[in-house]
Image 1: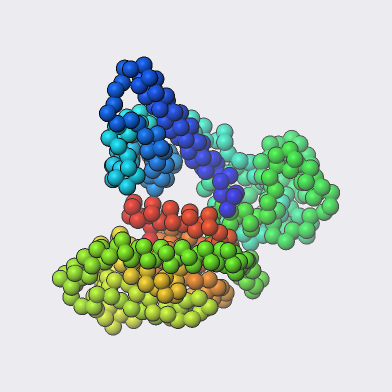
Image 2: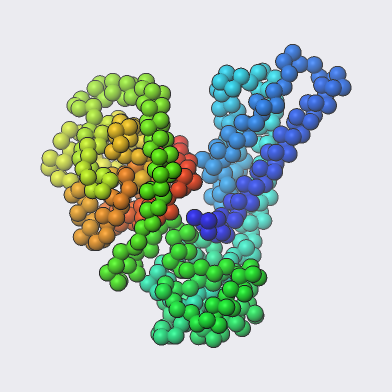
Length: 464
């Protein structure tokens, strides 16, 4: 996960984020300082004093909204749209703070200060983004990381495509002893491994990627170790592919008729396991309590607009391939599979009712699964549960598909925030690659990332 921060596009996002934080902190400090000077000099008289602690949530709320509305990705916004988005998000942040005022006991003076703060921040963030856009988008080539490959393997073609998509510059390939001299298409062969010392001296290389199971000679290993102290990054190509794309490369496993080893240390560790279960139980109870009016409203609308059962109960494959009854709000016509049989869920499925389409778009059809979480069938985060019919169908093409049942299924997951519906066999296999990544790299940090990306998906109504 750490190396996902080192792509050129993510470097730009981090720079934008850091610029925002410096700007927000400086303006917040200036606001408190100016208020102190004006009150001490007698120029400003307020019936209620400014509560400095009430200002602290203001930048935190704004940072969260900037993430949700992708304001750290300046490449996808035009100049005018960038300004409009910044103003809109600051306006939304103010109304969120206004809604939290009673809960946080924020007085009127502090709310006026927050309004002034967001107004100035909106102007500052707009100028900062326009300046950053001008620098980054016109000089993209200058911050490209230069990559040298040592050997090639079945992952190489897919790795090349991903690296070029993320603005890496692939310098070329050095062949390893025993490998053929025909590199993958689009990759320049620079010679044998003997040329590595001269290339590292004469060319600016930022990253060296070794092929899977490459047995490098001892002098080469010593050279790479020494170069690490000079800032050179050295990684295994398969590991770097996972870190770059957030999914597991399966080609070399299928070629060798083997299966990836999944490190389940996180899931069997008592701390992670107990904390995750505690969050599931507390979150499900709080969610059911807070959302009970929404659940009741959906049930009433279901009865009025879409006659038939309110809930849809279906058996899915759960933890360690044990079946369980998954509960959802019904979004399709009754007996939707009577004529078609089991079919993949699709974006524009004609069997979906009008209210079902709205529930799917807002992800509200999944809310009854809070009961599954409370019961222990599911967790908040994990691979989405699948029907046994489809699991068996996928396993015909992907022999180790059952590895995804090594952990509890989830209400949302890494695949859901990175993929579409997956309404084909190929789409489901692609989602499986993301599921394997989550299982291999599970942590509380990754779970938090998935929750934030899920909020981003629901609010922006993108992804599936």
